[in-house]
Length: 287
Length: 328
Image: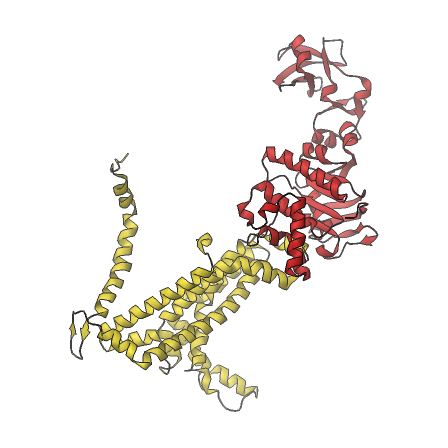
């Protein structure tokens, strides 16, 4: 037997140290670096370690910042709405309509198949479909629904949201499905015994009991959309911006302090949003 | 509440799952206002029968009548029955009062009226003080009473209970069964209680329906089923009986009707194989001809006046009228 250190708090510290080291090295340290750099001074040619507020002053003084943040919220909200409705429906179907466990697992794995490729590939695959002479436009024209190609299908907010929904719906399906599978089926029988119809069971029993899953899915989707930059760039054809793109542009111009300041503001915004969400639903039971 | 109660009748009810038959052509008339126990080993079809009456399982054949109405194909809530589930199936996100008032909410009764009714029901099961708690803040016995109140608020003509006591510890089980019996007598409606415990059935039931292999083996008043089992299965399942194969056929003899005597003076001879002291009684197991075991349950005083040991030869004796012929 190994001799444990006599001091119990020292031994406790020792036992959590692997996790502690990982978190310090890969989470706390990078974020601390970003915060530090966000106060540095930058000119066109140089970056000077300092403690100045000019990055934040510029950020909050520019109307572009507010426009871009509002645009980011818009993407997050609309994507959340669609992924929630689609994700809930899929999870509901899997959990309550598919009777055999084998089929549930098989269908659930099928949902994950698109994730076997990188998300950039999945995103780009929309381009030939939605383009001016793409499959969607030519099909609609050949059916006589439209006379000339729809311009807003690609390189538009529509395309951005479509790609987001496509990429992130699974993050809504998984936690909701997980919560639904834990709902005792006899609760549904009990509700039916009490005279509830399908819609009443959904509203009074299933949705309240699925709330923690919905909340976890919401956190996934919102944080992913808030932090994304590549989807917006590709699918909007560089015509729309979100905060991620603001940061990525700064980095491309080697304006690291400015990028860091924007990143800090974005991080705080997302943390506040999650804080608010967690006040509504207690997700501890799910973890 | 309607003190007269209503007849419940099963007419050739059959349930098939694919090729297996869970309930095979079962017919029975449940008298109004009685406490009936459906008793049997697991897989005998008792739960399927109850769930078909409740409407949570479709019937493959036959019909179910409640009063003068054929309820075979009505939705659960339209049948006039209410079900209490094995694990109570309380809604974990709703308070006790909201759980009880759930069916009224579904009917669109407004909030103040349904809470008043729910409190009335909670008073009936003695839980008024806990109306605002959530189900997981209650003990098993309290949860069960909430489930009872929730089932009774629909004013059912028959209450269906699916192994209601199995989740409780033995001490609480005995207390709750007293309470179930009291409620049934107070309300005067039929209680139909599924259980696999014969002691529970004997303690509670006016009428016992013993099921095995998808059919009813025997039905009748509790004393009749216990004292005069018709089949070897019923005798063995009810317990306290010896099933003995003799030249004239199979017979059941209650263990407490068997006495010990010297060899050659009893109904038959055997050797003692085991002795078990049970406090008020001593159970003596003997092996007789044909490798059959017979148990004699003797009052402890009687046993210890002439104590015996395993291996002793012994005579077993019982009065002829205590011996019941079995059909199979």
